[in-house]
Structures are given as structure tokens and as C-alpha cells.
Length: 114
Image (spheres, rainbow, N blue to C red):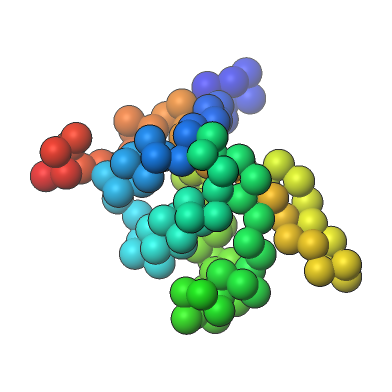
């Protein structure tokens, strides 16, 4: 934890992050979004910028559903916004895949996914 009592986020490469996300217990919509976000990430887990509208279209859900799930992922420390977009210029926010320093405080499946 940092001095403010919040968790510290550690950047994570895409494939290791996917393995972790499969084990973390979270709402199914957030997990679906997480795994979809990974498909847009560079191998090092950066430059995730598909945009809410695109994600809603690809996932066959509403934009509010994407926004709620994205909020869940941010609150869990699994994504971090690195650049704010501009909706008027139709530029999406940019994220990177992260894991919180408190990861093992989360309900998780064991490494064998049991």
C-alpha cells in the first residue's frame, strides 16, 4: 500500500494478466470485459484503447454495461487509465493492464483454477 492507504498498481504483461483475471472472483460482466480488453492490449499490457462504444458493439451489450464493468475493473485495480480521451474528438481513454498490490486479498481460484 502507498502512504494514502490505497493499493499500488503494478503493470502486467497481457498473457500473465489473463491468467490472473481467470482466477479472480468478480461479476461475470466484468470478467468478460477484462478478457475482451486484453485482446486490444499490446503484449506488455499497454495501449488498451478500444473505446466504450466499440466494446459495447463487440460484446453485444449496452454502453452503460461496459461502463459499469470498467468501473469494477478499475476499483479492483486490474486496469489503470493512462490517458484521458476526448469524446468530442471521438478519442477513447487509454488503459494499461495492472494488478494491485492487494491482489491476494481478493477471492481467487487457486493456480489450478479449483
